[in-house]
Image (cartoon, rainbow, N blue to C red; front, side):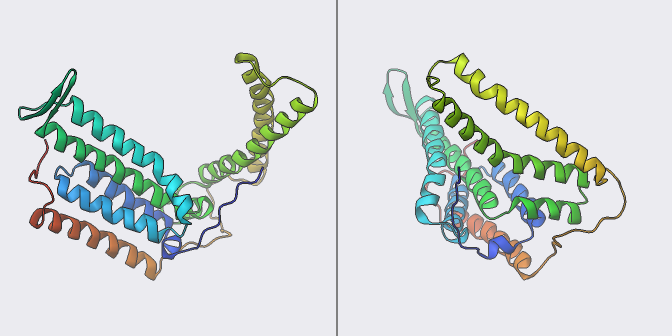
Length: 260
């Protein structure tokens, strides 16, 4: 089973993974404390533009990746709009009670969920797991035994998918009916678990033999450093946040500036 998605590498792929992780985590918490929906709308729009034109993936792939987060945006915003609290009633129909306060609060929460999702998408689509863990070891001094363990776990995921496909073909050849609830789970889960445990044990023994648990000085196959794209990354996100804040304060889309 081969799932391959081609993408064009952009300058975001060249940014230091640890720096990218720190900046996006800071932005994650900054978004949590933004209570002005105008500012949050601007941040979401800027992140959406970066997601569309900065990740280097085809439009159809971006559409399917963005669709779940758009549905989260619609569901969270509509839930808060229709069942929130407030004093200025717009619509009341049965259990549905839409007020001015709940409407703008729904818009705010929806865009907050969207912004957080876009931050995660931008990071995951422009960061290779191998480079991330090498950077964590070199810049943030993560111990190699943890970094290589995560790398081994990431490497096991496609192997498990291939084994799942092999088991499915084997059961089909033997004429085993592809139905049943718990029995179907047992047919797949037991061989997958046993193979995974056996493989994990072999990897653990190999890592011990290569002294991955030691604390001595190590050399790395990939040398991850800093460059001009790191400066551009920090400057871009700083400018993005400042522009979003300025435009949200001086050129608001909606009359509400605080939904708390």
